[in-house]
Length: 261
Length: 200
Image 1: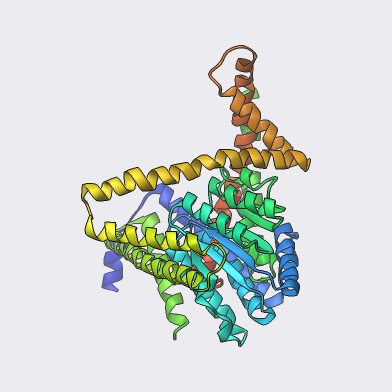
Image 2: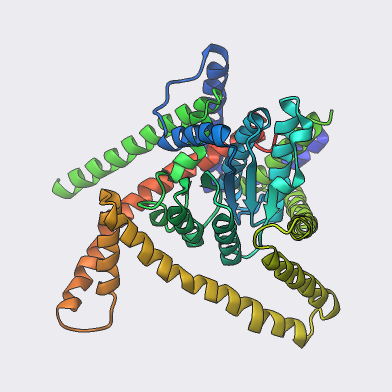
């Protein structure tokens, strides 16, 4: 008790910090409530995501033809600001790995960062073990291309030209360099999905990828691929988005009223 | 236990870093700093895994004489050369030369290829008549031409460029960033509360 009291005594919270904690606490509370509800009484209805449909259809095609499906995770490092995007990509790897072992579809993951490689290897191995085919896991399924973004992009582009996959998913942390493998995919007629949360890199996906994931849609991929509990977090985001929109509208109206008063 | 322990470690470490971000406390500061330091060390160890993976994948490609195996030989030689330079010539002019005159120009050359890829992407969007692609190519052209340091009628495009960047682009980016911020918080909470384990 004494230690806790001592800790509290030596703790200082700024006004911004207190507001941040309060908003985060509210978000977490709503998130837990809605996620538990989604787990107990079924997932919330979500709008369909074109990228998820494309991934399913590409996987079905790969099951028939036995061709490779590629996931390019980008150069994002786990433990930095790139973590959420890389996790979204790893989720896709996990989703494919769980199905690939059963359907004997080769999944190739190409990464530009070593921590993401560790995550990809773990996801692939777990997928194979979970389906009862641990022998389906091959460490060569995940390839470390290069730690520099452009070298990575050229490496992925070269690999795609050498042996074009049936589908290419560019989900992870990539900048403008992602356009290099995407254009090779376009030339080779590869079915492509991909996206980023970086607004500066987003234009490179529009008009080139069949089903782009725009901004936050990258994080909604799990829910769209059928993870019921993920819909709880989507519902929380929707509630907060509505609150922010109401706040913006109210502040615009108040500013206008003050100007005309 | 093998599954519970990593989750617990992630939860405790994440909670400490999060609290350290919002609160000012000497103990939290010290704990947060050492955890971040530990993450950097783990990241460096993972690089070794990356190197081993690179060597194994390309060795297999050479052994099986797969298509493009000669490229794998070049990659293996280059990675071994980088390793030797890093180990032998650490903090020497040779090391500096290696990075300044070999690695960075190569990366910059690869970056220069992007201009051709952008032109190809614009052409692709134009050919397939996608509305978003066409709008994007049109807006990009206006911004590029409006930024040119030449006079005449092109100068008038400067004000169009300013309006494009300040009004529709900024509005779209702000909307996107708000959604992304909420998505990032939700993803973080999913991992912290162990609802989501994408590495499994």
